[in-house]
Length: 368
Image (cartoon, rainbow, N blue to C red; front, side):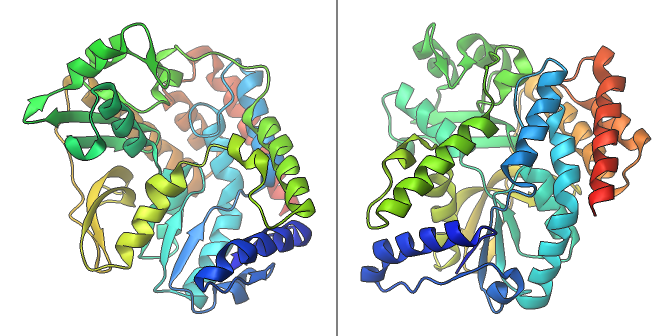
């Protein structure tokens, strides 16, 4: 069952799915009515962009107006993104509770940790946030050692887009230093060898936004994805029997590296060690590794970290708690607290950023 807001595009994608999947026995349906589409579902893949691409553009505009890199999950835009999605997400979650309360909800919507917490707040007990970056980072690290992923063992700690591979071994030997050495003057998705050495860990690619090593681009992701989406839909409208050529330009690794493995694990009896985001007993959504099967997941594995990594994770967690409070109890004070705890935002920008986000939030309230 495919659900979308644009009926024309939805039907085009549904026809494409039928053409690709019918020979394998799949039945593909489509609906713009979310409540009826959810009726009796056993698994829900949640990837709604609340506010559409226009909303993402507004978030990126906020970051750029303050001199920061375009991003919706790291930096000043994350809170604005969370405030915009909260009402719509609450509505979606209520429909899930009413129509399919026992369904597994696999969340891809960013900011992923906040969205996963809000879905769980709504009473959905089977919610898992999914991200490919831990596994992709481990895979690329293994390749730097001329190894396959199944030839290494590794541990992970942190929050979504703010996590670290804190242990990576082959044949019982620690190989993190070797990864850094083999990088040389190159980077691992923007992560430098000196970052790995100083942390004694391998961060995921978003760490470059925190370390000051990222570069500003003239065009943000919202504009790029908007153009790409239109090209893809135009190609599908011409021929829905073939994969659109432009789709190859879209990074989609979260499907093969995270979504598909978790769905497969949830349908089988054999537990599989995978990377998930869940609300833990510490009342925060953490990213880590756990065994997943049709019986659920657990135990959620926590990993020992180096002192530098522990300090970063503490900063991330303090910021995350302030973000959650600002979304749940929105006011100028809670917004200011969250902005002031943001590892990216400079102190001199706190008041300006707070005012911009508060003004945006008030405009959202008028719409609702």
